Length: 276
Ligand code: KIV
Image 1: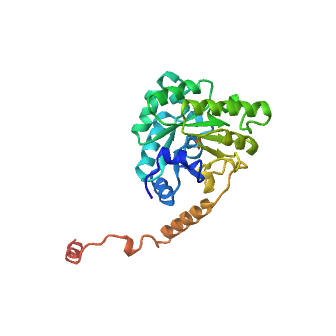
Image 2: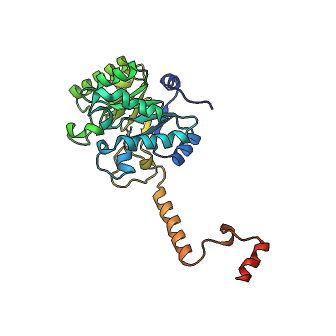
Image 3: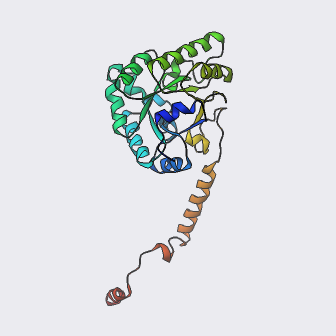
């Protein structure tokens, strides 16, 4: 299987479903890449699931850049997309291109931008600078306080039409795909059908052109919140707990390390020991 390009992702709209997962480090990136996921997103959900912060907007630019570098080193085939953190474009929109270039330099092939009032300005600037952009509408965690909390978006005709309008603006500006978060399936179906670019849903039903989940949700590693749309494919937190408990017990009972896990002096040097 060859390297996945942005063109491949756009073409998948007509053919196959797109798979996307978040990832934050080198070792997981290798596993996800080898498993065949189409897009690996260094999501700013890093703030919640890795750094233990309440709000995604608290993650620092340097933190996102470091994790982007780590993930990019582990990926050979998947498309690498980095979430632009709030501080990189919403606080000072004029610096968005300079900040986005840092993500490309760190190994990302595209950046993701959440909808906010000046989103069209930022997207236009980035695309003019030839930086590929993935859009994100619906529940946008960076500005969740303006949405009245973590709530489903597009719950009535008026709200649905606003989302459709945002989607069309972003398509016109040239985003190559669009994340739809926490939207009733009927609304995301309408948006998906109305666009030429692919939609990737999270809590947006099955009619999107692809799906994304937070890796730590899929693996049952993040226990603080479990939104309705999450499916835990395997709860590895239990397996990790078992492995760590076994290690603790083995160390305490002198069963770890064994000879095979220790370095030994060669026979001729054993004399040294005796001379002492
Ligand atoms: O940061 C993130 O994990 C995301 C996904 C939910 C799409 O933006």
